[in-house]
Length: 566
Image (cartoon, rainbow, N blue to C red; front, side):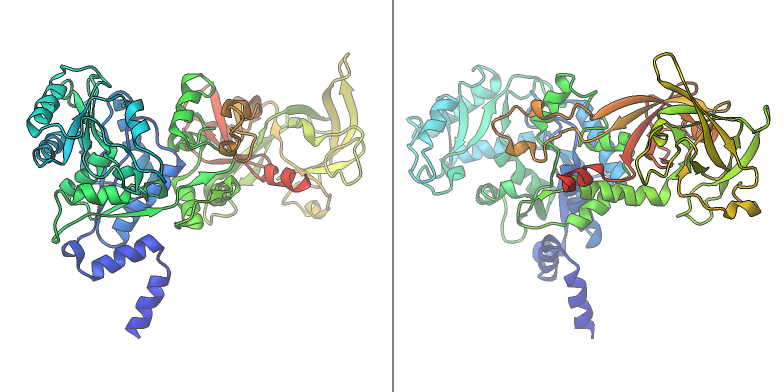
């Protein structure tokens, strides 16, 4: 019976978790589990990193291990403290913590340098004076062997002298590199004397000008894992060809008692999205978005600002899972996860985004009554709030048509609708300005039809949201949509990705809000459902008297609907 339970539990594990489980059961590394999340602080994290975070921290949590946060700060040209701070914030927001295990690759610069010196002394590394273009040309192709560098057989003494002088700043950037001496005829291109160190004279954000040479990722990464005691180095599939080199370098330090293991899983790719940090940085630097945390960006900070919840992102990642095969995931799956979570927690309020005035000609002037509205029918005990009803109201302009088609169940001349939570009204007259624009709808209301009264049982086919004009609060609403209008921008290799931006990805409107919604709008991070419109959250820019709301997502997926029609 116990064995059956174990088998059933194992069925619920993804392949990475299964491998970790097997290692632990085999007693590898003394039965320890220590993972790491190793971001390079050269930009803000995006949804793809969220998948890695959930894996690295999640597998440690599941099996009682630990997960380190290690900043891969080996290229001072591209790195910034701003990125370090944002990465910390994003991980915490997703619900994970690294405790006191925050490390930097720069912590290991002395050990890495010493290892490089040792490898030079053992004849395993040499200084090459060739340009990067010359080195690339000599590497050959996957089907033809490379050619040895003319500097490959330098003496140990000369290599030590040159490497020391490289770090002393005697040589210009790009003039010399340190390469591992492995095999220029290897079938694995990464084994063809890979570069271990290059000269960079930009001051480092942590070490200043101490170092003039910096290790390459393939050399630094595995060694940093070893220095920290990492047992499982979990990364994405593009590192599969790098794994033999990872193991080659790690074995310069490791033995049978402890050796990190690299495991790869598929990246998160989304439709209507680009994940390239380089391209995202271009969007920011060229002002095509309002920053790394622009709510249209696939960054974690952008999604947080837009109103996505950490739970919705984690639910989405659980849904798509982890495999060994690359896939393009539909952004609709992410949006469904967001809607599903917000439906559960968002407070229902009334807001009119494109208002037209309605005057109830038979409603007493000056009279105001309060109607009760549910805060969230999906959440037991969420309560209700009062909403003022008066003679003059606002409804959505698109909820009225002067000459409607059949099956138009909203407001039209001579047609009745129910105002949600209140009365049934009937349009009697349309008022226009000199240009023919509708400025006002004159209607009558049925005083016996108020929700909760005996006459409320009378049925009409349409129900509209509304706000009282005399009590409405103005707010700016930012209607965000997908940043790209092409399903797979990465596949459009003949076009500049900036040409594929969706011109309708941001529309700014001025809305009318009920007072209760306006009060909640003063609290950034609040989750609201503007009834019949979508989910919204107060933006960071919001303040009393100048409310700003971001649309997190519409109530329905109009993109998939339009796609189905086409």
